[in-house]
Amino acid sequence: MLDYYRGKYEKKKFDSVSSSSILQRSFHYSGYQVGYLAYGFVIINYAIFIICLIFKILFIHPLLIKIVLKILAPLFILFALKHIIVYCLTKYFFLRIIRSHRNLRQNIEHQQKNNQQDIYNERQDQAIYVDSSASSTSSTDDDYYDESHLFTLENRHAYFLFVYFNFFFDCFLGIISCILRLLKSSIALALYMPRLDYSIFGRSLEGIDNGYTAYTSYIYVEAMHTHPILITFTQIIYMNILDKRRRDKQFLLIDEKQIIEQNKRKSIRFRWFLLITLMNNLSLISTRRYHRKMIINNQKINHRTSSDSSLSNRTITIDMCQ
Image 1 (cartoon, rainbow, N blue to C red):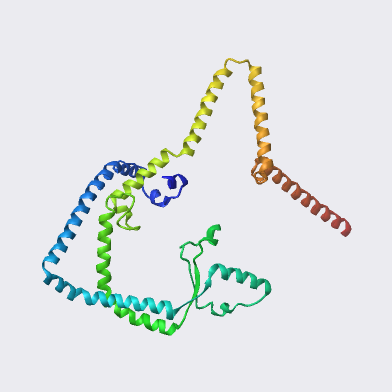
Image 2: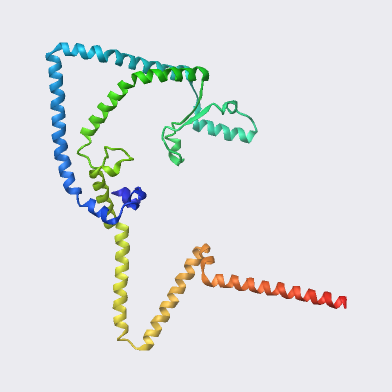
């Protein structure tokens, strides 16, 4: 809710949807919240019961364990060995960290002052910048949380050969990755079922998730109607309108002279506030209508003087010719 108050939400997602559909989705939030909690609790209990039942059957019948191990154990062993080999090669054979990005930046600034060349500038074509914080903007906290590094690829030809042969291993061992992906997604689906603030379909398919859309629509409607700054602003405007109506009623009972005096006071007060505002914000002077008129008049005067001077020069030249 606080992020919505600050305006930190995807506005394009709500701009593409009509206001009536947003309000219609927000109606379902409370019912979906209770239903998702209840049915999510039931689904998790049934899933745990089925898992325990499968383990019980496997322990009762050891032959089933042997059959499963004969099929899956070689694949998992090859999968684990391949990942261990890839980890060791990338850490000790292909990768060489130069230095932290912060120290490199400081050294480059120092060397630019001294007109010296750095050793690492010769290998800029091989350098790869990795930002672990996944942020493209720098802030004042970078000095404390800067874990980015500049590294180079060692043995590039061996690296490309390994990538080529690893392609065939991944084609055959991809079934293990598929099985693990299905297991992880099913576990995440069962655990996050009661939560409406998390979409189980991913970022691109959030509109299909009715529970998530109901949650976001409800939060959007609540933020738009309970925003503290908006409420105070409208309250101030409403109080000013009531005050103006009360004053208008009082003006009917006051003489015309008093009305004229009060209008003069208002105009003087307004001009005084305007003067203070323009003194504190000089850039607003150019937006004033009077200032624009002055500029236009000066341009016209300059144009007239230039035309008059050209005419006078022409008359002088004509007289000289005569």
